Amino acid sequence: MAELDITSPLLSSPSSYQPQTVLTVHDDQDSEPSNLQSSLPTTILHQNHNHGRTHNENGHHSSPNPYEFLRSGGFSVPASTTVDPFRNETPFISGIYEVIKIVLCLPIALARLVLFGASLVVGYMATKVALAGWRDKQNPMPKWRCRLMWVTRVCARFILFSFGYHWIRRKGKPAPREIAPVVVSNHVSYIEPIFYFYELFPTIVASESHDSIPFVGTIIRAMQVIYVNRFSPTSRKNAVNEIKVEYLPLIMPSDHQKQNAVRFAERTGRAMASALNVVQTSHSYGDLMLLMKAAQLQQEKPWIYMVEMARIESLYHISSLEAVDFLDKFLSMNPDPSGCVKPHDFLRVLQLKACTLSEEIFGFLDVEKNGSITFKQFLFGSAHVLKLPLFRQACELAFAECDTDGDNFCTKKELADVLRHTFRELDDDEVQGLFNLFDTDNDGRMSRDDFFYCLRKNPLVIAIFSPRLLRKNLSKAGDKMLEDIV
Image (cartoon, rainbow, N blue to C red; front, top):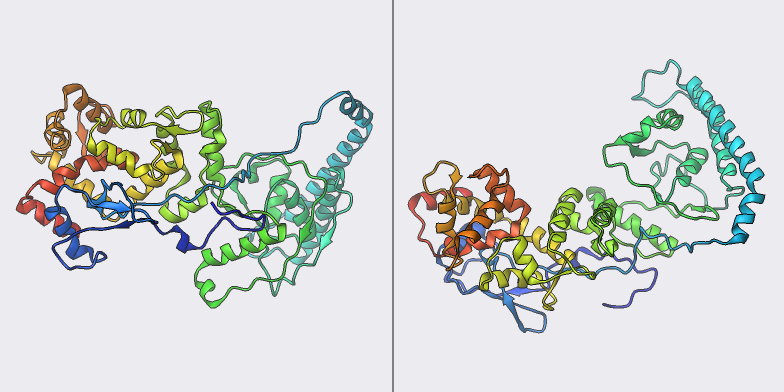
């Protein structure tokens, strides 16, 4: 990995997200790979079982691609950042000297507590008067009510004083509202919203849960807050000695960025990271959810399971909750203290029999070819397969192969008949294990909903149906289904 300085953003340009592998497919047709309507039937009906091999950048052969029948060209996993934005690196201070300081400063703490309480009560009463009788919440607050809110804004400054922010240095100045009506800021603690309320009295975007906070909820409503429905984030305690709100030069969107809000947001983020002289990462609240899940399951190093969720959401449209589900599955594979899973545990959890195809599935994820996989590789690989354009179509065809009598259910025997095209020697216990994996509601039979739900939770398993889909001469009904899907 190239060495980065502290101003280098980790959010690369979109071109860096492109797969770093090249797939060679020998087709009888001269159709373009992007022409799915003409190439799909040829790929599924006429491709032989000798899977195409992927090539790395040096031209060396890697393991066969078991998802070639879905038109997968492989995937790449971006290098992980060494930055952990959720870890507080402030050294722990203890000892007799610290205890003596706490005792001597108790009177000061009590005085600050009184100032804080008095400021909060006065600001709350002023806000109640400003809101009294106001029903038209869709339009800006009348000017005379805004003037009353100045009392609350002054109280907010006293609250900052009680917290120890006696003098706040300012660098630059905000542009007029007419020129720059939107203020974008980094948010690292509960302090800066109080400052912004005092300094700018803006309309803010906040979680719905803030509305129910005593005293504060009333003040937030007076700011005509724009609520968003999201999980209430766990607060992070940051030891700060002073607050700086630095007003950067205006960033005006180009004509292209006016049509693409994501590009404009990336440009704004890079400007803030550069001004703060920090590394820009793609971590989001989803990474905190992964961290908490790993800690809840008593992993030795829970932070190694963070994957920069903002990047994955952008690439594969995988939600944070889906990522947590994938982590739960991965952790059931008994990763070692470094967060790596060996083939045996991987196959055990997915109920896969040790065979050539199972080795290819594991090798597909093991992009570094070191005999183990990380959660990031497992998540990227699973998301890649799940979001392939032909994934759902393959699920439809696979279930049609299993449902031989057309009753929208698959029996254990029907599943075994299909899987014996993949696993030549499959005993009854192994069939039962796979059947239990698909029988998600544990009612003793596999419905169509069970089948699709299982493959969405375990998209890598779709590969076990590839030999059946590739070898079988589909009937006219199957051809009709394929044409309808295409």
